[in-house]
Length: 316
Image 1 (cartoon, rainbow, N blue to C red):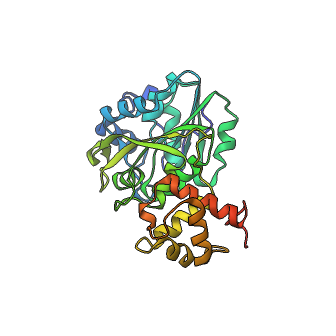
Image 2: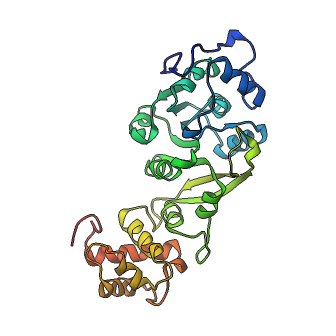
Image 3: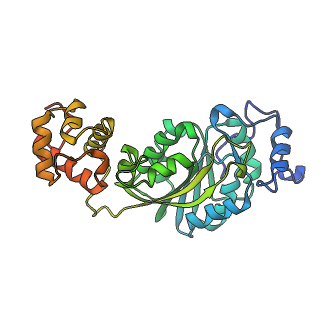
């Protein structure tokens, strides 16, 4: 069932399946242009709208998601429904969240006949996506999105926080993918690397040039796959780990005691930082950029032992 209106404020009509082949090949730039023009629409740069026009990349996205009959899929930003149409026939349910009401109106046509798709119109960053998806049931939750570059971090962390999403398949700017997969002591290794890889194993499934989109963005992209780690493993995304990583990389050229004390974390001075590092088995002469994710987690746990399990959410 498509939970949306048939037309939005940006367009005057919606091309329906009976109107011809304008919507049939959604990886064709000519078809995309014709479909958009026919409904009085155009790509909106302020929403980061770049439509996939590569069948090869579409196939790589589907392969990375690895859809199965029991899956419930959350898609952020379905656009014209290109990925949606490729995934929906193979899964139990697909919930697509689209902020652009004009495109949402088109989805009524491009997704016609897919009874297991629910389209939710609204801003994903302002929704309780967990509540939306939880209503759908299903054994496995997976997330897929061509993340708008200007919203990459907020949406990434929002999806990671949804523990029932076991896998995320995301199109991100190449530079973001480089940061997500960076190794310690490299220029791309930073707080984002630590926060994400503490929760998920990350790999690049495909490198995607800007020519794979219409209109072409100004940068190349990468398709990344994030597989949620077993909760029994020692690392987890929490306020303590994030606080330690941000402090360490905020002063990445300083030794850890100076960086941690300089970040003005609650209850942390240089003496406390040295005690926490000793408790974690970390040489106080090291800089944050040299620590592995597991070592960052050990430091975070040490601060919680010294300052309380709620640290750093409460003042000490």
